[in-house]
Image 1 (tube, rainbow, N blue to C red):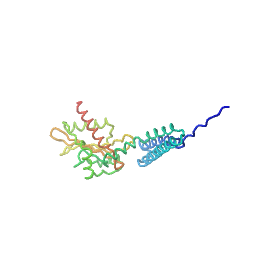
Image 2: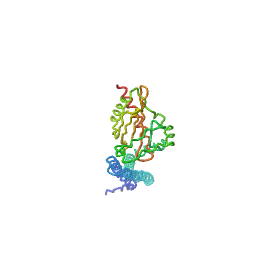
Image 3: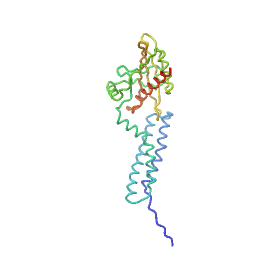
Image 4: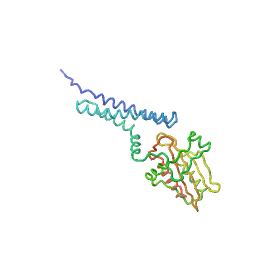
Length: 258
């Protein structure tokens, strides 16, 4: 007579760890899509993303509980638990990176190559419409000191070009980076100062960030100052400084190809 040896039951914590982790993935993806296609307000999209993070963290806690049960009671379910951990890590990967940057970097959301006299965002009708009516942010003295400490390499760009040539170079470089022009003022008047305002989008969520580029003529050269500010949140996680540095590098590369 054959006897069937009953198998050890599967850990319910392992099963639910995997289920929650699987659920967190589409919720996170929906949050990104809602933001990128502007289906809802940014705050609502961030709330959905926060929900996905909470669910994924719950899956991680259940993974830990499953490991304890499996070790102590010899239950099955290690594969389900590891699957839950892996899928949770996929959901939590980008938020974890942002959390690391938030700890490493100061709370800043407005960066400029000129911290004493930063470029002012245009207040024209077109620029205000592109910024959804948001006023120009104030560049605080406290933020100035924190920027100097955190991003000493964010400095004015000086090119050996006349203002008109530098202006065209700025437009070309910005276009190659996908920046959208919202207002522009070519060089003119006594000062000869020119400015272009742009809008760029963040990499993952697709939130709009505002950029102002000011050009001041010097003797046989042009000084270019760039200001980049996030519209949402108090912390940009280093995105604005990186945007300015990448713009400067690409502008220099375009200049070298001439």
